[in-house]
Length: 86
Image (spheres, rainbow, N blue to C red):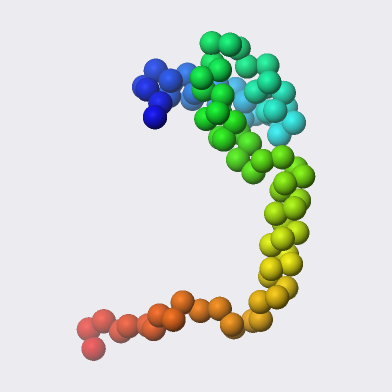
């Protein structure tokens, strides 16, 4: 858990980095000053939540393939609608 001081630092750092594109964010993280290294894991999760491009492509391909195998109307929660006040 981050302290209040760390949260303040992280907020300022995120404001700086969120204006960058994903490649710029990676470079920004690599150049992060030593005094902020303890925040790097949290900053990395916030700035690069999807991982690298290769793993994202693999995940999308997996989802596409899984979706092709599902038949329409074959998914349901098993819950039934309830009418209140009847």
